[in-house]
Image 1 (cartoon, rainbow, N blue to C red):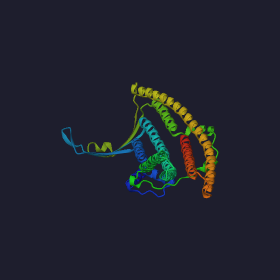
Image 2 (cartoon, rainbow, N blue to C red):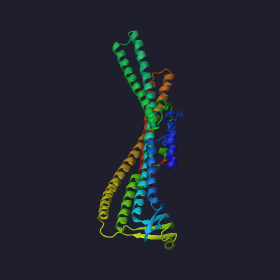
Image 3 (cartoon, rainbow, N blue to C red):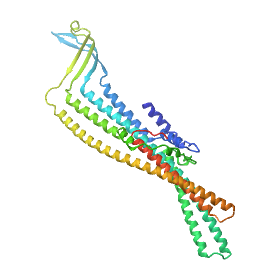
Image 4 (cartoon, helix red, strand yellow):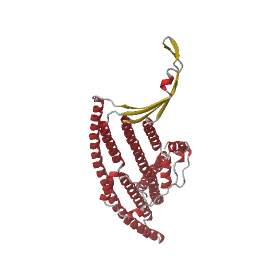
Length: 415
């Protein structure tokens, strides 16, 4: 995990000058987002830190070694006797209830950090997808505006020609000019939106503004609507896999274990020790080594432990209430998503019919235009393009909602 964090941090040094693929696909975008995500990198470092804290707890069972050297003399019946020694001490804790409790608590903290990392990935995926779709919709809006502007410019030109030969009034000419100028304002707004949506995606991908995406490829999700939407009950059963709910339940279980461990905690500590070496004083009586086991069990009332148990019980009750609230919120949120998906599917059907109508009407207008029959081909083209945009927006909302619903049940929906 530490090595992975290093690679991610190393890659970030190249992101500011990175050139995006052109044209840019959604797949490319999501891949780049995963590679250059500051929040994910930070969380990976947090996970590394929590892993080291867990290792620190485990290391308390490691062997400690020390050297004890002394050059000295002592008085023995009026004579100076060598009291020097050289010892190597080896100590190892075989069991410590406090360490076991600490390890279990830290393992839960590490698990929660890992689940938070997964949540960050899911949130970033949704954010990047929405930003990518916004670029496409801005481009489609621009296309509609330009088509409408062309129509208005032609109409203004015709009125101006009529005005020049006094077949149209100044009022009619000003009316057409006003409509054209209003459309020009809309064009400027849409152009601004094109730039802003691209700049936002560049920021999400951690690339420089000047390297923002140029051409993006519109994904086609029509096939998704051929698949039946699963019943709500199927999603409801899987809500227990929600990442946030998992975190809360893990935390509650950890508190339960801590309460049980604290109640059983007698403060038992078992240590082993070995001493190897030589000493000058009474050398013949002491030998070169010593080994032993030490059992330590405190006795008497432990008010600190009782207070800790009481605090843990309160935490457990609060966490249980939080879980119940989250379960209700998840059920309501999942139901909203499912209802929205059903509505979006129905809207898709209606827009498909509308697009067929716009297409047929455009063909008729084009045929009339070629036969030099009065035709509103320009308006027909604008209406067709606008319906295309509405259909694309509906599809994008559908896939985003579907992704959110699957994230809610702890799944990654593959497009």
